[in-house]
Amino acid sequence: CRRPFRPEQACHEAGRPRGDGASVDMGEPRFDWQDIPLAFGMDTALMPVSWEGLDQPGAVNVGNPHVIFFVADCDAVPLDRIGPEIETDPLFPERVNVNVASVTDRGHIRLRVWERGAGLTRACGTGACATAVHAMRRGLVERKVAVALPGGTLTIAWGEDNRIRMTGPATEAYRGSFEWGDFA
Image (cartoon, rainbow, N blue to C red; front, side):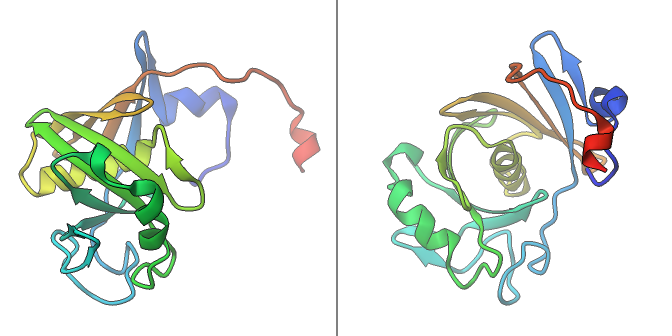
């Protein structure tokens, strides 16, 4: 969101609190190679590249860049080893988040994510969105899908309006207060 933060608007514009968590409008995905960005032009739906048996990924920018590989068993991929290699490959001049996913059926995806600059993560909302949209783009799943990550499951829907809606559990991690003048 590129607007001044106003606490009274935080839940009204960005998402909707729900009894089972929160639902957030994640915006529109971008697919052009320049928007990822990639070092040179190519079709981002089925990229003609590979790393150690991971081949023909797709790329999506959902506010940050993601490369997505569909594999039979995402848990079998040594993502802790290959993730940093792909993240820093010259093909991705701004580095990239690396997603390995297994489509279990038309309504479910299992996902593991190597986040650029952070490493293996238990949950990644943008990774779930990018992976789901790429699977939808390739016709592998329906327009609403459950994405299971090691840290929990998110529901991702890609609407006819081209906007992505992410819904999942939410837990309060911190409560505090501050004075606006301290940040002037």
